[in-house]
Length: 557
Image 1: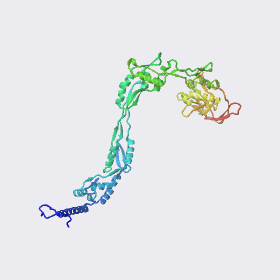
Image 2: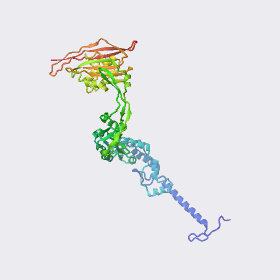
Image 3: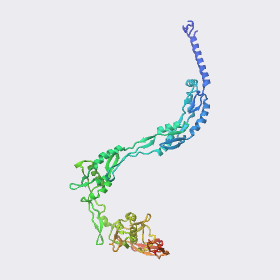
Image 4: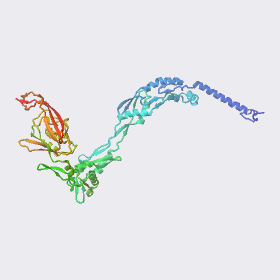
């Protein structure tokens, strides 16, 4: 029995008696021949790299994969491990490849050079034809690379400077924009990767220009359009139906400002600055609220009553002026919104403070120019200070001691004397370095330089009003008065110890022509004790220690 029926086969001019079996045998033989040749090619090529193959200048042609791996490990890896010298915007940096996230993948590089697996016909063909230059496979850790570039970027980055418009003296001035720079991260990463394989290990990393948000063109546009119209003349603001105030450019011009808005600039006003510059204008307005005030009549304190009135808020005033200067010609007029306003200090508030009588006072006679300067100015600065219960008087903030140091120290001593005897709490006090007969020993203060201070606190239940004034001068001699007005509630007894640790200074004799004689004073220590009583109790005792240094007298001959 036949496995298949006999069929006619015509191959070339074979006899017609040949059948399909011959064709099958022929095909199988051909496949065996091809497979044998392929196996021989694999035995000859296998994992051998094509001749002429170079990896970053390293010749690995004709080597087996293992040998090529060893060569690359010994020659390429040390080269890649060396630092890369990077130059960015004229500054030089040294980058460690591993810390920058760059590593060489030798296995992937070998696979790339092979051109395929050992049985891959492309690999066999490449072995026959020969290889060429193969780029090493570099693995990049994106996180480490970004961190390394960010360290560089922080040192070379310069932020752009937006254009600005200011109005010193009411005249617009433009500060033009400046571009910034930043590291181009993508291009820098590519160049670092390429430099990793170069022999000179030097690379220039690119930077990119960062444009300012507000351009110089935008600033110029604001000056030529909005600012020119705003500063073209005065504006008029209606406060009510009967009062209209004229606001000149000299008042609102310096309060102009250019605010950034949506990538551009918009002209605006500083409400606080405008309000400060408009005080004289607003002071003339009728029906303004009036604060209660303590005034002295016949040497007695009286309260000038407060009054409710109409006021203008800073934001409302600025909004009205802004609306007016945005217009032209006769249309530069706007109406401001007013509000019924209570006084900041009412009559009742002052009455509850109990400012009725003098609780302590000190008067000091001085000679103008010799040792005290002119106390009139500093006395005016201190006069009228009102301390609420719990309030603090920082003498150095209230009085300009830098411009008038001698007069300020004279006033500080008088103030401290009155406060000490009036029962106020002494938070901080610097005593005079030398004793002066103008004050009771141990009860003085000085504020002639930084670090010297006088701080007093009102811990009583009533307010304290400080009255400071100077009697008219006679022959350049005057009397400085400091009075503390309140409601008495404490009895204060003051006593002093004897002077101890007394040091007598030596007399200095000056025979020069520009000699200036000076009286001296002995140095000593002294303790001053005050007892504060309220009612029939024993009270509280406080001891204050003061040390004076000796001051040598100068005698001219």
